Structures are given as structure tokens and as C-alpha cells.
Length: 267
Image: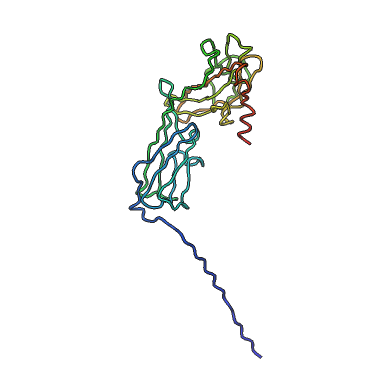
């Protein structure tokens, strides 16, 4: 007896509906993007003539995830990009103390390659905010910032990359026993205007490879931070600017504790 083999092949069809913008030659941004500035973010919103399914990135920040976003699943003819100021914007300062935040935002209509419809916009924000300083000792404080080798006590101005150092901030106050001192907004500024943010407005260290935790002294207005000497790629010299804030122990800001606050952000 002979047996015949009957092979049954089941065909499974997957129906996928995709909205794909392929008309790159005619794609374009409608008008000028709208820019909104805040203390931590720069928001860029724009409209397009076709569903925008490309990418947005900040020039020279390609390898920083917060400065790039993929919109390949977007089906709207618009997009909104939220840019982290500290990570994505270049900062410079005017003589009056105002801060200029600048970034070149690249809008690409393909998520992987450049097309002739891609556009780059210069985004700028002007921050005229006056850094908060409690006036209990503003006029009378005499503060210094010393940088020394970790193994020595004398102040120095010339170092080599990788040297272990200690930053020391100290102030002479008329009533130091009743005043707390806090360190915020530390930036390294090169001669050609480049800025590296070291400590944010809350007194938290941004990059522990460049600046260690700030150590506070409960009895005298003196602060310390360990660090290692670094160098800008295009500059041999730079300066470090910080803000010292003073708080009267009898005022509401006496409960301000930076160290625990920073760890809460990490968690």
C-alpha cells in the first residue's frame, strides 16, 4: 500500500498600515520654528507640510542622548523638541552678567540620512536673571577662591592635566556665626567663550569627573571640593566662576541642605 503525503502550508498575512513621508524633495518646515525658553529647557516647536518622521539633533551634540530625538513614529505635521540647557546649549556671558544660551538645531526629514530638505536653525535665549544672593552680607563679604595641590597648602595657578587639586572658597563676614554660605552655579570659562558647567543652581555637582562633592563647614564660612585638573580641547587657560549665596540662620532659607537634595535628584 502506498501512502501519499499531503503537505499543508499555512499562509499568515500580516497587514501593517504605515504612514511614511517619502516626498523629501518637497518637504519643508513651514515658517520659522517657535522657541520657548525656561530655566532648564529650550523648547522648539515647528510645523511641516508633510507628516514629520525624521530626526532633530543639536549640532556637535550627536552623542548626547538628551540632545537628539527620533520622530519616525510621528504622524503629525508638526513636532516639539525639548532641549536640556545644561547638556545641549552653549553658554556665554555678557559684561552685564546676562547669560546667552545658544544651539544650532538640525531638523532632518529622514531618521537616518541627510536630505536636501533638512534645515538648521540657530536658537538663542537671553537669560537676564540675577543670581539670587541674600543681602545679609552682600555688601560686606570678602570672599576668595584658592586652588591648591591636594598634597600642599599653598595656592597655585599652573597645573598639569590630571593633577589632584582642592578648591577652597572662604569668606570673611561681619557676623559669620549667624550666616550660612552656599556654593552654586560654578562654570569653567575658556578664553574663546566655551563653558563647562560644574555645579548647578541647586549646588549639585554636574560631572563628578571634573568636580567632587562640595564639603561644608558648620562653624566657619569655608567650603572645599576635590577635583582633577582638566583642559579644554582648544584652550590652555580658563577661569572658574561661582556664586556664593549667604543665608541668615533666622530666615526661611536656613533649612536649605544641598547635599541631601542632590542625592534625592539622583534617586
